[in-house]
Amino acid sequence: MSLIKSISGIRGTIGGKVGDNLTPLDVVKFVSAFGTWLQNNKNKKDLTLIIGRDARISGSMVNSLATATLQGLGINVIDLGLSTTPTVEVMVPELNADGGIILTASHNPKQWNALKLLNEKGEFISGENGAEVLALAESEDFNFAEVDDLGIYETRDDAFDIHIQQILDLPMVDAEAIKAKKYKIVLDAVNSTGGIAIPMLLDKLGCETVKLYCEPNGQFPHNPEPLKEHLGDICELVIKENADFGVVVDPDVDRLALIDEKGEMFGEEYTLVAVADYLLKNKNGVAISNLSSSRALRDVAKTHNSEYFASAVGEVNVVNLMKEKNAVIGGEGNGGIIYPELHYGRDSLVGVALFLTHLAKENKTVSELRAVYPSYFMGKKKIELTPEIDVDSLLTKMQKEYQNEEVSTVDGVKIDFENNWVHLRKSNTEPIIRIYTEAKSQEEADKLGDDMIAKIRSLI
Image 1 (cartoon, helix red, strand yellow):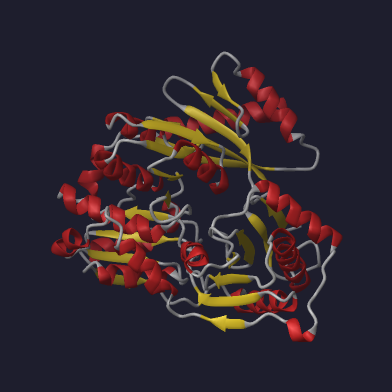
Image 2 (cartoon, rainbow, N blue to C red):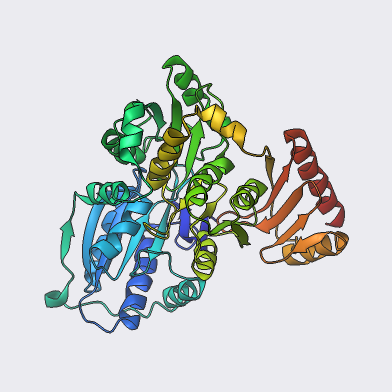
């Protein structure tokens, strides 16, 4: 069974049986539920939704199903076509729309796709709202429009231009400082829409782009999750091209990873750390990440007399805490940058622009900049779930096992030791338990993860 309904949206593999996978009937059902939910909660007759998709192979089919379903409900559709998650998020309020749908399975392989649902602010709907949508989907209590009341369909091809201009207009983005450096940057866009959007931004910032896997055909040349083990090609090309650094984005361009001039990973966790360092250096405030993100962000915030807080995992949870604390910067350790001056969503484009500004002003190479930050190493392991495992009971047992340590149960179980930590949680998007660890060396982080797996197996 590969159909997952969660705070992250409706996600599944294409094909197979209805209800088990993301089939055409499932797309129609869940889009109908979202459209109906909007109609039930809006005090207006004519609703408009923005829709956009990444370049994965099933995108065109899913887009056709979704747009036709919305029209069938009497909802007007503005189709951005090939887009990015942050671009759709920006365009919902820009066009005064009532919501949006992003068709992307983010970092999942090509057989996956998903419906990510946005409110009128261009932000992901809340868990409570999502539950209401799922209840409507189960009841199938839909009322479709008669022929004279069908929704109007139109397309827009200027969304990237609008998004990029909003980034260039940000006071903290210094385009002239970047242009003066004439950076040469290698881009791996995993053959999705980052191959369109990122070069457009870099061109505006006076950078030379060397393109690697930038044809938006959905044929992912490697696992699309931007982790070190998947990025050997760009690491080699950065050195070969004598580039200043490399940029890697996932298929929907909400995660940003960097490669230094030596072909080494900057560290997925350190994208947010570097951007926060730049912003908090100029404005004391609050930085937010989730419980599974590096301690380095907390450390950097302290150096700027700023505060740090951690939320439960999930972009919605990060955004909610950012709003509560009026944060200057936030995001997730997977390379997700959320800059509220632009919008409350993970955005690789604004991340690139802010990082470039920071790099230019520091007058350092990328490896020199990385050396400024405290060195932590993360381990990411997982345990496949099986029906006989009571995960909640298991996590409670782990909490009791380590009750003498600093333990948080905001999201799963996080155990803070003096020099390292481990976070155990059920995944929102896959049927697994994720085990995150962080320590002062990779060996220590990996050993801590292995020790936790052994402890969990003994408790099972």
